[in-house]
Amino acid sequence: MHVHLGNGESGGPSRVLKVSLFVTVAYIVLLVVSGIRAHSLALLSEAGHNLTDLLALVLSLTAVYLQNRPPSATKTYGYHRAGVLAALINAVSLVAVSFIVFYEAFRRIQNPEHVRAGVMIGVAAAGVVMNGVIALLLYRSSRDVNIRSAFLHEIGDTLSTAAVIVGGWVILVTGQYWIDSALSFGIGALILWSCFGIVRETLNILLEGTPRGMSLDHIGTAIRGIDGVNDVHDLHVWSIGSETHALSCHVSIADIPPSASERILRDVKECLHREFRIDHTTIQFEHAECEIAHGCVIPVSEEEHQH
Image 1 (cartoon, rainbow, N blue to C red):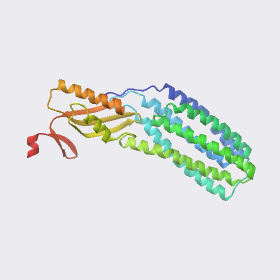
Image 2: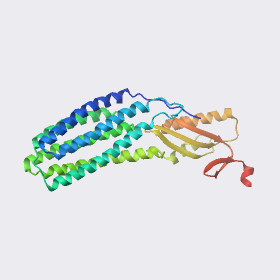
Image 3: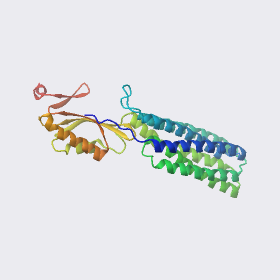
């Protein structure tokens, strides 16, 4: 039995992403110009960080459009994994940027340059406001891994720009310009931390692993607890998209007519929807014993099993 996938509303996230895209472009220009004028590696590192945010927003916006396209004869699941792929690309790009930041910070900390801390503080303050507002707007849609990857980018930017403000103030007070490079190391570490969870989750989805927060044992126990179900096996649960889960299994029932088994099927589907938010299901009923053969679980009669 198949439950067909529905398309969610993308208007809200799409509008937020478009606004975020425009604001991010403007802020990147401000960071580059200010970073060059202030001789601040921390500001230029922030420009690189925000450049990956720009890529993240472009990919996320594209993914929102693609993953809401209806299924077709060649794409029977639709384009739900477009958002997952976008999130993975975003995270990998962040890893590359973090190592570039580490390299530049290491080079600069050996030969500190004069930094105009006042410019650092002013630009970073504008960044905190901008990234904080964007993160707040994205928060409502952050259950989707694609949007959550963009949301984490913005959270990381908000924290790192706040650190730049503190660093700029310390430079003003102490005159220690190496602090600028030390901040860059911190920003690079924050970038790596923010992308780790996204890489892990997207790879789990692409490898068709059990969805985050679900347990096969709990799902199997819930199905076995339904009246009329004798056992469940060959149970598989995976994600088509970050918020779209699928399940297939064999369910053992008594040798009853199809009209009587319809009630059991309905109860299984309702249980999966209510307790696990799984709506795309393929459930095979059987009353014969199963055994493993050639890597597949197949039903065999009692007479065949005795031989």
